[in-house]
Each structure stands twice: as C-alpha cells, then as structure tokens.
Figure 1 (cartoon, rainbow, N blue to C red):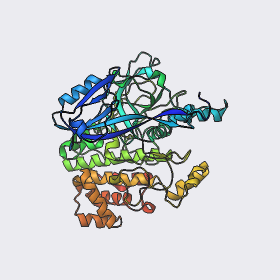
Figure 2: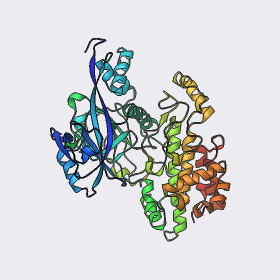
Figure 3: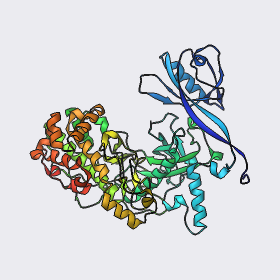
Figure 4: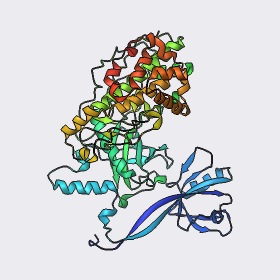
Length: 538
C-alpha cells in the first residue's frame, strides 16, 4: 500500500462517439488477441477529417449504423470478430464509440480509494464487524459462486440496460451431484456508465431479499461472483472479466411484449403456453394467501418456487376468440398482481413494471439443485425480471428516498414519478429505523407506484391500439388532461376494448382503480379481489 498523502497515478476511462465514413483511415491492432485499438490515424483520410481527436491507444467499444436501432457492443470481442463485423456491415457510414484511458495525478489517492464501489463496501463492512459479524455478502445470505464455474456463451450480450449488460451462459459447480451445467443469465455493470457498480450492488441486495421473501414473484436468483483483477478472464473466451456478476437461472426467453399485438392467433398461443385450454384448473387462488416459497436451504439462496394458480373462470371453447382473449388477460393480470403482492409484502417496489420485464417462466427448464423442484407438469407463468431500478423500503432503505427516481415514462404517472414526495427529507430516510421506514411505507404508500404501471399493462392488454409503445405517450397525456379520470379519457380518445367491457365493464373499473391518484389507487391485494377476475370468459 502507498503511504497516505502519496501522489499516485489514477486511470480514468471515458467514451466518445465519432460519425465516420469509409474508408476509415485507421490502423487497428489488438492486445493479446482481444479488442481493437487505434495504432495510427492516417493523415488526410476520413478519421482525420472528422475533426475529433482520435489518438493511438483508443479502443473501439461499440459500432452502430446511423438511423438504425441495432448497435454492437464490441468491447470484449476478439480482434478478428471485430474485423469480420466491419467487413460484414454494408453501410458506408458508421458511428464508432471509442474509449480512452487517461492518467490523472491525484495527491490524496490511495489504492483503497481506487477500488470499485462494491470492493470498498465489502472492506468497510469487514472493518465495522471486527470479527463479530458477517461481511456484506454473508449478511445477504447470498451464494458466492466461483468464477471458474461460470462460462459465458459468447461475448455478444443478450441485452444492455441503463447500467448493466446481460449475457447467456452456463454454471457448472462442483456440488451439482453430477447433474451437469445449468443454463444461466449473468449480468455485470456497464463500465462506461458512472455509478453502474453501485446500482449493481443495490440490485444484488434486493435480489437476495426477493429470493428469500418474494421467491414466486421474480426470476430465479442463483447468487453472485466476485472476480478480482488477478483472476480476470476474457469474455470472448467465455470467461468472466473483473467485477461483480449477478447470476440467475435461465428459464425461458419469452416476455409479454413478444405476444403483442395480442390478437386471435397470439391469444391462442399464449393461452396454450399458460395451460389455459386444458381444463385442468386447480381452482381459484386465495387472494389472501401469499405465493408459497420453498423451505429455506442453509448456505444459499433458493430460486424456484411453487406457483399460485391464477384466479379465473373455467376455460371457454378454443373457437371463442373473444372469450379466449379475455381469459388470457385475466390470467396475465392475475399473475402480475400476485407477483407485485409478493414483492410489496417484502417491502420491495419494482419501479419498472412493463411487458418487456414480464418473463414467461418455464419451470421445466430449471435443473439446479439449489432450487426447489417445480410442480410436475406445471405450465409456464409470468414472473417479473430486472430489479435494477427497484427499491427496498422496509429494512435498509436501498435505492429509496424522496424525489424523482428511475422510471419508464410510458409506465408511470407523469407528475408522480417518485416513491416518497419531496416533503420527506433525505436525512429522514437515511437515518430511519425499521419502525420509521414502516411508518413512511404506510403514510406514503410507495408500493402503489407499481400499481399504476400494472394499470398501463392492463390497458395495453385490453386495447390493441395501445400495444405499440409509440401510442402510450398520447394516452398518458390524455389521462393527465382528464385528471386521471379514465372514464373521461376513454370518451376523449374513443378507446375500444371489448375485453374490458365484459361483466358490465369490470375491466374498465379495475383499470380506473389502478390509474387514479395514489391516495385512491388499489393495492395489489385489493386488485386481486376485484370482480374482473370473477367475470366469466364465456
């Protein structure tokens, strides 16, 4: 360790975009077979003509085509794969994102302060415990995975969110009793986003809590891997690079938005996938009963949980398209509300409820011995994924405070994008005891943030015109103009939703109870008891 006050060189990394035409006028090289780095900028050619200060050593981390949605995160790709991609792209115009490492001299920089956030948190927690308590990860009761047991399928990400990058892979630990590798989804922080590691650590804590107390609500969380710089691997070789990794079991790739537009054909497919056509119903779910998690397992988190049967009437004939569509909407909304009820009972607000975060969970794909066995023959059902924006509100107050927070503007009330109002002081939350947090929960009802989002999902399911995300802003603007009176908004926009008309307009009544002001809004528990779920689909 350097002595306190020593002058150390600290490396800071930042990225910048460069629109550029071919020929690029760049000489590129690799580093140990990975990445594409600038070796030389040819004078007078296109890279030089951009006027951007591209320097030798800059790394190409992303390649995109102007006007097209798709982009390629190539930071962890092999050099040859990057060259193959550049050859394959036919467009003469590209946008290259470069990353640059610059050395900054800081007088008070210690190696402790250069650690990433999650490392500092772990070290500080150990010091506070002084051998009398568990460290940060142990207190979460989180399974610590060996990095060598996890393999990434390839360096091409499944998806990239606001702060995290998700990959498909396999987990093959030594304690699986010879069952072989398990398909998993692994997530790491996006190193180009400031604060991403702090957010990933918060997601770890909330995922651990959800796995213990709201297991039926969310994707099956396996645990985390901490990769130090000395054991860092190369993603393009299927190895984990340095940092914190969160791991979930892979249990399907279909999300609700994949069934949009929800018409006759897609409704029949969804009904079959959900097992709604078999007639083998387990009966109505008890609206007062929480989804039943498996018994706790010492030394790790459990991830797969018994499914509560959705509340619904007996299935209609498959030929009755309108009735089948109503049955699908009832089942999907029942499962969404049950998932939210479980999270809210654990004090977790998801804060990003939308169709793309509703995974059709397929129990038959789960094989790891760290989870409880799924009910034999159980059909798929919807779970919530992506707790990156979530808040834990009753124990530690993680990602929880007054004022606007992360949200999707298409799925929240335009003038209520907060969990706690600005009138609550930040210091009041930071210093709050669990009793204080419980009082804030009861007084301000932050969990009802998710119920508005559920109301938007219901409107999408019922109104085909709203299943395109491009139409949602107009709907929410009209709803705001009508002071969140759905009846007035429906008349103004002339919304047509036969699914919501059934049972004397029970669906509209439920939607109105979810899309109103927070003080009047239904809870998940109240919504599950609504007459809409008792309405016959025939």
